[in-house]
Image (cartoon, rainbow, N blue to C red):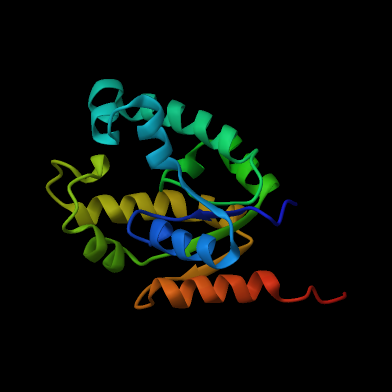
Length: 176
């Protein structure tokens, strides 16, 4: 496994970008956000991609970006919440780096996404909590399937989380 790469997975609002930036800085690695990368490559924002191509069109683009980015070395990659929906993406993430699942409760996700209208899956829905709950139930098993480390983000700041991830990675492996 390429331990020089750290891949952050988890739901929207878990703090992947914020924690990822801190972690990359602390370890001297390049930080990449897959959603930002998609926007840079297409020249448009993600809500527009969803509007024009639907979720399936976005997921195809996301799959290509994950395939490309996971082949790099020395990166901290914050993935989109749905990146794990694609079986190939899960395999690439698992095989090409250390995968950290930033687990956030539905309450925490709702709080952290409440003032953000840039999340297509939460736009124009009558009950955001219901959508977040359904996404959590669908995706949590997929996050856990490939995670090398699961960390709860509820009530914790990015500095604490980055430090805990680093401590885990730097901990010497114990002999069996």
